[in-house]
Length: 410
Ligand SMILES: [Zn+2]
Image (spheres, rainbow, N blue to C red):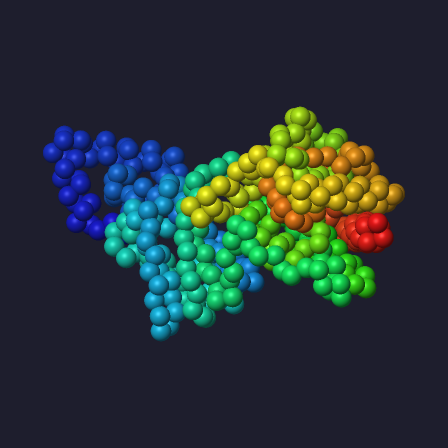
């Protein structure tokens, strides 16, 4: 709120500068016509706080809740943690709320209530009432692509495990243990990935296929599946790699759907890492790599905690070269199985190699599968259908089983 005293002073100042009241009213009329809604019709535009808060989103992951504020400018904010009852208070300076009040109703198992008020003129205070004690973390995301400035508030539960750069892999070598396949549905939460003409989001269809694939893998005796995400929330690329190692993955499969500027590109493709993270010679592939590796910018990662988010030249040691060779054979099996599905076509008949950040686990054979092109209307339609998703999952599970069986025999 802008106090009437300050408005009064401003009007007097304006009068002192010989700005006529008529000119001020004309300015206000123009401002309104331009859609600049003022909190008070008498308020001069320059009194309005600079930063407009336009939306608030809540994303729920099993081990944390992420709250994202959309802003017109970079956030100046402070964070307070309060106990008895548990609350997190976010104060945004030089800001005003322009959020649909219904957006305050977003709650989950941790956040029980969201309230916003003006702590002082130009300071918006948002209070998150919580069900349990959490560890808060906040960071700003600069505008990128079609995303504006954002403030991210992470509420980390007690069971939240920080993804270290090189976590200790789970113990391998026990012959009686199941073959572990870590399935990685790309994108999620803030990051929709590619979007089809009909509005299909990559993050949704790849999760649906991933869940079906996990079910199929778990039905194979001696196999178990783990997922890097199970719902609509973002997981950083580093964390996906760390989760693969934490689960003691024998194989890692990242699921995606492609998009191209024209609608006729079609078919599935499989990628492995290229040695030294070499850029792909193919323009379309290097655009794809860029798009997939930019996920952290959109999905939201605190880059202060990630010293080197770039895919550097990767110096491969022997174990990594071995992982890569195995990934190439694994990828070929997946292509063969997907290619044998009558409703599917292959975009490339061979496994392609490129510098995907999510394939960097050095000791886990890792592949990235682009299931189809969402920019192709026929494939977008197919990819939405549960029956087709099931067929795709069956092809991927079968390729996985055949690869594991043949490599055990080798
Ligand atoms: Zn993707």
